[in-house]
Length: 97
Image (cartoon, rainbow, N blue to C red; front, top):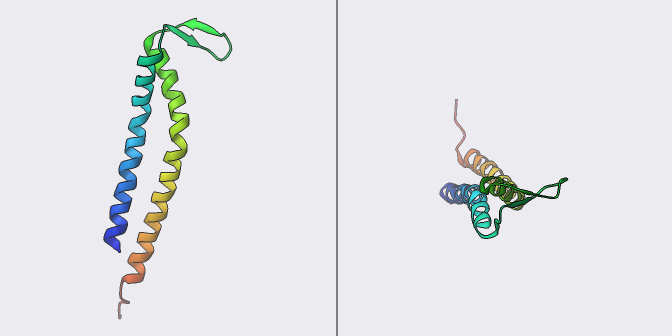
């Protein structure tokens, strides 16, 4: 049981790290496909901008997509840690002192 929980926790951790890496990757790919030298601001409409400014905006919007998934993975990881802790305490024999 302990080994299974440990493996599942490692899988969740790996998926969370991949999601963190996905934010800049998706931002750069979207920038490479969609950048035409113009950024769309919140208040001032269209304005010329550099490739990096456009990439930062794309990474911001990509983070809005991936943050809920990272939150769910974090909650699942914490729950698995609690289950592992309870299983470790429950499985130990009582010490006779």
